[in-house]
Image 1 (cartoon, rainbow, N blue to C red):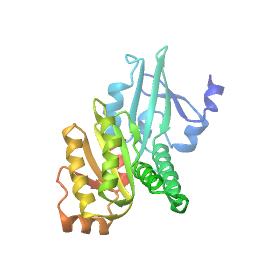
Image 2 (image 1 turned 120 degrees about the vertical axis):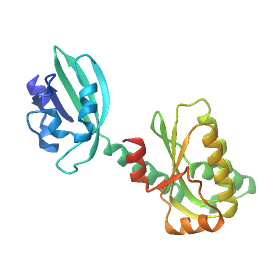
Image 3 (image 1 turned 30 degrees about the horizontal axis):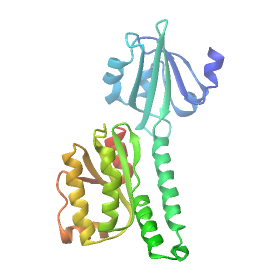
Length: 251
């Protein structure tokens, strides 16, 4: 077992019920500076949480914690814990990689939009169909967790785009477990008056369905345009995308 654990691709700890470390993987040594106890690699604010959930009475558990790596003293990890013969086996997955994965998906969507060539559209019907498809593509629904989703917005925020977004997203929210929706404005260009009015109406419907709305990625031009026309409700919080994901999804 010692030899197998050594070569695991993820950080691994084998512990006693008192959190004394018995074995680790090579990946553990690369990522962490640790002492005799598992608690030495955990942020102090997570000690009580770990003591409540990681013990032999709970045979298997998945737990999100903040760990102190060599590169980051506040890194978010998911711990996969299993107990056998009064020994705990823990795999540690860095959740920062999930943020990177989402960023990669957003870049792919931006590339697909950039490659759209309107010169190939020869008729009004084809143009209308393409515009509907582009509007749907401009507000994709990306599930981050079973309870949270990201809707990145692209291009001009107008009424047509909001109508397409409603028809695509609202059916997914009825009778769903989603509690939090992050709307990312990082790739939005112009915000029209009609688009802004429709957006606020859409956010109100979302809140009536029971989901919380978080706005991310507003640049100064967006903020000035919005404040010139209306006020964002206080119940809608604005962050940059990375902070919103860390604070609301993976905290």
